View (cartoon, helix red, strand yellow):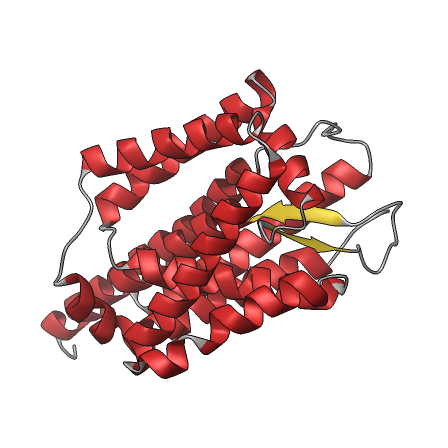
Length: 281
């Protein structure tokens, strides 16, 4: 049987780290954004914008894409470090390092994936404070629908991803499979990791940090199961597969475990209370 543990482990590690990091700097982020949250309209506009961007990327010149993403990533690095540390002269260093690596030392897959993981963490934590529980659920559904349409319907998602990877932009983790070495590495987009982290953070805020870590684990398990079905020919995904579906399935599994555990705990408390009320016979 062909299977892989590297990608599921990496997804779990990034998502779990985002839960811990968000708790550490949540206060600073809330102060920066002054408690603002996205509304339903904002979530709809955001998903539509992402869908349009995927389509546009398939047609615009590569140089324009490179300039836009390098500028966006550099600004993201600067603003995040500045929010956390409050010193602009320190915040300018990470963007400079990123651009230097991109221009001169980008052939290393290890360095590439480290920056992808870093950008995933920053995006998850940075955006996590803007979402509420209900808006996260709405955003997740809309993003999954858009992903399915752009993968199976238009095909632009796969085309855009291949184009940006060809430009060596850090928009996905690209790692070999292990312990079974297949013909080539496997790829998971930054947006899929962002959705995983967002769901885990919101779960942690609603049900506690352990619940957030649990959903990070079940998303990793869901990724593992999907890979097993794919690598062994049970599921055909030669043209790509909307990984948001896998993420949602893993998160739903985690939430099912959380609600089952809470239900059993409440049942146990009721029985304890009844026993106490009856008293010794």
